[in-house]
Image 1 (tube, rainbow, N blue to C red):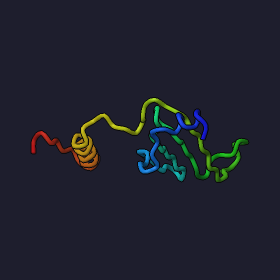
Image 2: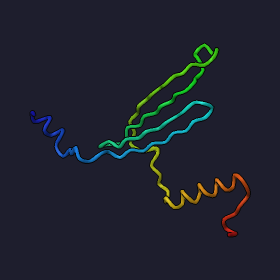
Image 3: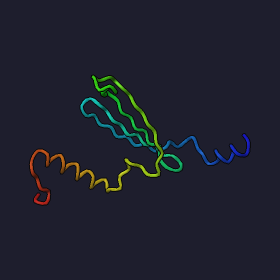
Image 4: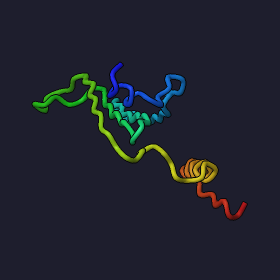
Length: 106
């Protein structure tokens, strides 16, 4: 290993795995995914879309699988909210979609 490689790889350990976040959703047969991997100086974001997408000529659909990777200083999937607050909001949203419940009155 030459001096440049030595400096480049110094301090790197194969023991620790980078942090990863994922989110996916499917609407009308088209799945979209966001996968974020922490890198040393930011995040690698992989966007994926697949399913029966419209053809370029506008007539009919065809199965496609499209990927795109970008580099970012911020993680779009990392939440700044308190986890308990997120769970409360999700629960309220789910309950409010069925009936009008105000948690302040319980």
